[in-house]
Amino acid sequence: MLDHDILDQLKSYLTNLKRPLILTANIHNATLAESETAKNMLAMLEQIKGLSNLITVEVIDDASIRQATFHVSSPDYPAQIHFAGLPLGHEFTSMVLALLHVGGHPTKLDEETIEQIKNLPSGLTFETFYSQSCQNCPDVVQALNLIAALNTNIKHTAIDGASYQDEVESRQIMSVPAVYLNGELFLQGRSSLKEILAKLDTGAIAREAEKLAKKDTFDMLVIGAGPAGSAAAIYAARKGIKTGVLAERLGGQVMDTMAIENFISVPYTEGPKLVAAAEMHMREYDIDIMTGQKAKRIERKEDGLILITLENEVTLKSKSVVLATGARWRLMNVPGEDEYRNRGVAFCPHCDGPLFKNKPIAVIGGGNSGIEAAIDLAGIALHVTVLEFSDTLRADKVLQDKVASLSNVTIIKSAQTTEVLGDGNKVTGLNYTDRLTNQSHHLALDGIFVQIGLLPNTEWLKGDIELNKMGEIITNNHQATSIPGVFAAGDATDVPYKQIIISMGEGAKASLGAFDYLIRNS
Picture 1: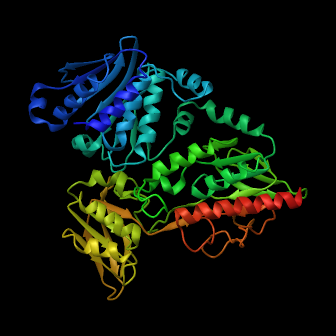
Picture 2: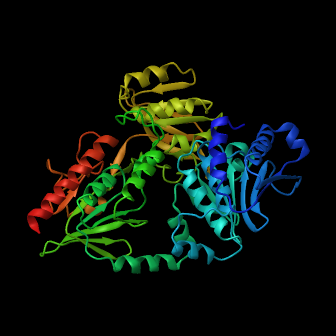
Picture 3: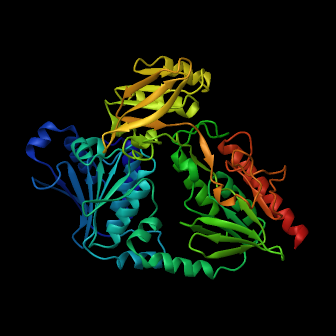
């Protein structure tokens, strides 16, 4: 199951175990004979057992619970962490962390968060459906595993949706991660531990607001923590000034990017890995990182201080600001799109693609993102239809050549999607108009992946900062905006090329511009 290199690494990690572990596998004899998942799971557990004398494997036959599952617990610590199916791909790390945390290895959480988790009410049973190719799922799985590891009255089961298609179909899950709490849908999509705790602990929001209200004035406050924001924060902190970062979550759109092959000096990496490296770099400096927060208003006072008001009505003060709020997926804005979002209308092919195995789907958009999505999805779906509004594809030639070689991909150009159709529960198809003939057509589909570009996250700045007709922040060659002391960088600005490496460079330039402003106006 696991190759020698992975086993060697895992053996090294397992030396951190402080107490014995029991891995309890639930497998019917009939299931073992028939299911590759069950066979491979038991083989994997036996391999893990051989890496530490603190680990034992037990096999039970309980028809009342999911088959091909295993439970991570300790005789000295009755944690309730379960895995249904094989936690491979992006979820392998989730399993390793679960072993370590149940085995007594300390977490990296601060004492306040640990205490908050321990004080959560008992009787909470979570189920998280994930796909092994989903880069957003581990954040949710690991957060809920941590909660279950620290509070033994809470149960969490991580479920590989590809191995339990019947459950996925019956619950009509079309987007992962999908989290159920006591049988009811609790959340869908990427979410951090802090965001999950805020939903479970209603007093957390008020306590966080109280802490934020006590913050002193920053020298530089960066709004956003994607490539531009992280670069700006690092450059500011290296100057020795009081630096803060305010963001809904770390990483921005990069967290949704699977393959990164044009980041100079790094032939290949993945979005979550790049975000983790950027976070580690930021935390090497004295940067006040505030996540789970959203700004709603900006104002410059007569004394030069810039006020940022948050959605919780707390106001932060800073002598300079770098806006790096990034962008989000652009919507088609057609009837049915919003109604069937996460019920067949999707935006992340890596996350949600495996849920559409052997089903007909469409990709909207013929740029690089759209054609890359079509290529990836062609290996999963029954058939992929690409709808491009223009009369030509905008993707790089190497991608066009690749997609043209795939027998189960159809390209339709000059196609304008007019409506998403469904049966009230899930997508059943779409209508589009041929822009050359003005004829309407219908496609019967199970899924629609929208890949038509990005919209800048700048609505909250309208009327306060000069924006162009696309809603992008207008900057000069020092990244300065129309408000003195406020600078901007990244995909939220009018920079012509939206690339990670460009955003990082612009973020550094904005930080240097802001620092120069501070020197001249202190």
